[in-house]
Image 1 (cartoon, rainbow, N blue to C red):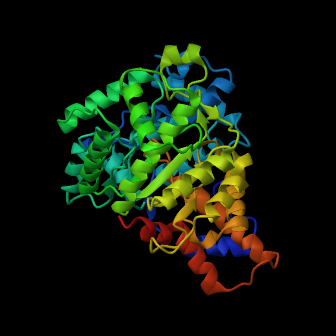
Image 2 (image 1 turned 60 degrees about the vertical axis):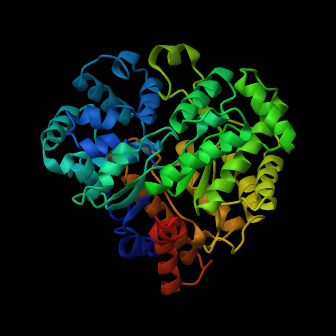
Length: 468
């Protein structure tokens, strides 16, 4: 029996039926990824499997370092063949790691290769992959189309011109919607030099000298409108911590003056300013019917020696921790609610030990005002949690604390054009979980309800939630 088969990751018959008959062939709405709109538009062929598979993939780079592979073969100047060889050696050592599963899902789905990659067959598999990569079916747009992607949302700076999104939207030959996501991380930057540099660029773009918090709000509203015109309906934020401290308008104005002057705020002042910025942005999002994503809990670029050598976003990030998370998250959502500024919101927690804290806080702020079910969402297991254990933890916690059937489902959070098999991975895990409930008699075998539940989570809820 081939390794990736109809029963892969599914240990019960009810789950297999749900996967095969409902989940498997549903279209994908990938509402959070890190693909580059320029690469999609230019649609250039990949030189080889190493470029497609290993370039920029810090998941794989971390595994290779753990396997004793030198940096020359990871981010260095080793040949494509040498890099693929050491990756194949690492795959042999990755039993129990989701990379083993993802590797073989991708090989089978995109390349039709059913052999398991190893140090014994890497040359043959590399040769086969490189040959087919010259075909049009393996260019970026074709890979997206073959993956059955209806909509994908890139991750973009507020300063972006969105020129390539516009070009893609004008191209009638490519039917997948490629939409921008508003990611204003620089406005939260605690380091004065980075904050002032962002304000200077924003001022130049808006042709207005930003000298007050009110002018900052107006400038951000202008950029949000620009994104909205290009189809954006979602923002994203990546704070290390979720914190909130009330500040009067006079205090906010004073803190902005200090920041724009290049002064470093205290921890308390930073919490006050960050809370004010979140409230301001949330109000703009709500006014336009957007959803707001909060990806929190990543502590980044921890190996300073190697970061200096090979750069950021190269595999030196990890899970953070936070004291008084419940107070901070509830305080922030409550302040937005009091101000009439709480938009549809998706909260992604990186530290799984906080899952119940996050899920129970979210339940405090559900309402029917946004016209969707569960407008405040407990986001899918991401980054260090897009594993079987991480996904099951998130799904079970959401089922415990909320309504799983209203969940908007999976995303790739990836820079790879062939990572869409992670949606298949999630769907298998989801169907196995729900099928297990039926098998154990924990829920009835009601075909209509079960079918609707799986369809909702895998596709329909996201379609209704975002209204792209």
